[in-house]
Image (tube, rainbow, N blue to C red; front, side, top):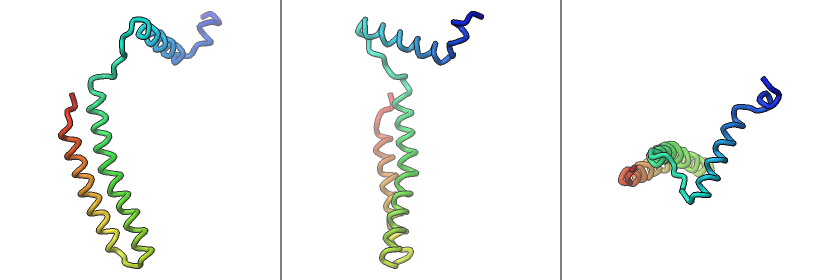
Length: 100
């Protein structure tokens, strides 16, 4: 092997190829599109974040209010229930969108 090929990492070649493709697309006026399944993947990620994030946020908020007001466990239960309802409402809205 020559010194020139030993200095380059495999990721360097990938980066140079991506740069060349971007330069060619800019030169010809073509738009580089995301893969066709990217929107479906984004929708799945949003569903996952809603199912995890909303109940977790509701639980933390309910727990904090319970500790502050001394009403254990009523705010916790109420906010977790409301957050599950909000999460499933959001998932229903997401399911109405087209994945294409």
